[in-house]
Image (cartoon, rainbow, N blue to C red; front, side, top):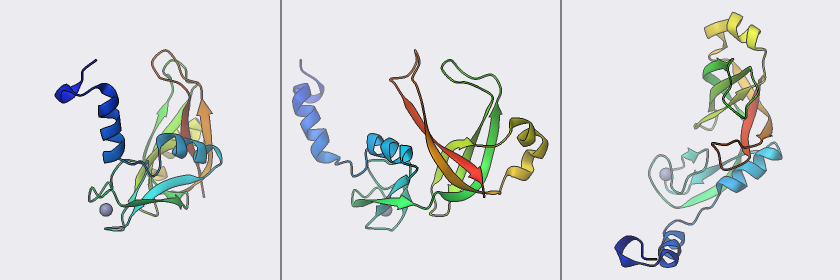
Length: 155
Ligand SMILES: [Zn+2]
């Protein structure tokens, strides 16, 4: 079957693999999380850290990246409590966006009581957190399989 520009799909895949060498794949990131490690990419050109992993530096677009382990520490930038979870998820739980000390903002969950979070409200924003562990949940009818996310706890 011919794809873009009259190329066979195999040829396109070869060109894509040559153009984008993934230093840290989504699978690598997930497996590290399950070992309670938060991995990211450090740019050799500008020094910025990218997390979750991408094919290029989040700041300058460079492909000169190396895989590094982040501290897992950061602060809550925002959060929300999910009381009516989507299919395949068990609620209630708290989704949060954590600004890591290395710079990138990483989505995850917060290991904290939902009632407490609702009582504490905006005072949770800015609180220091640390990665507790990576958590895997099975896929559902709308996903391609297992989903792994970072679970943070208050420091
Ligand atoms: Zn860069």
